[in-house]
Length: 157
Image (cartoon, rainbow, N blue to C red; front, side, top):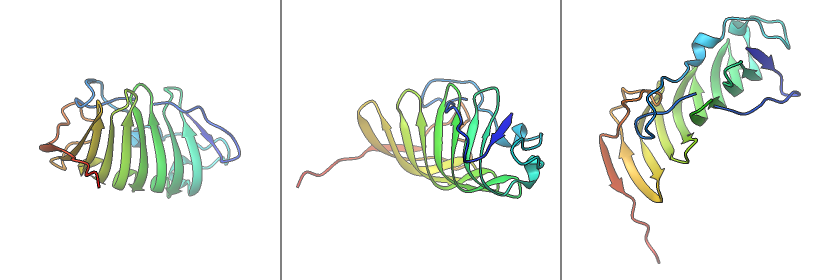
């Protein structure tokens, strides 16, 4: 894995999707990837603070804020063969408001708690749906499925 500071560029890419999109491969967990020193600052990954871009050979990358070696604040996380999350992070987890877009174009925007979607809007195949989840299943889990799903009706005034 290599760390790139904001003056350098990174190749965007992506690592897995849920049953909502039909892929059952597990998503790479970011925390397991950070075991080397930062090449731009020669600091241990656990000590990163501020804005950084992190990239590894599996085409994973994260761009955003760090506090004491964990993603914290606003950021973007790309997963090869899956999609991208953009939103809030707390202690390395997707937490708060965020958007996850799968490579096939499906998109979920809503609240996350410790990497698990809670509720929001899911756009798929030309339809827009209000969805809720159990709040216990990670966005990366292949068994992820809404506990409720209803079409969003757009008013025309």
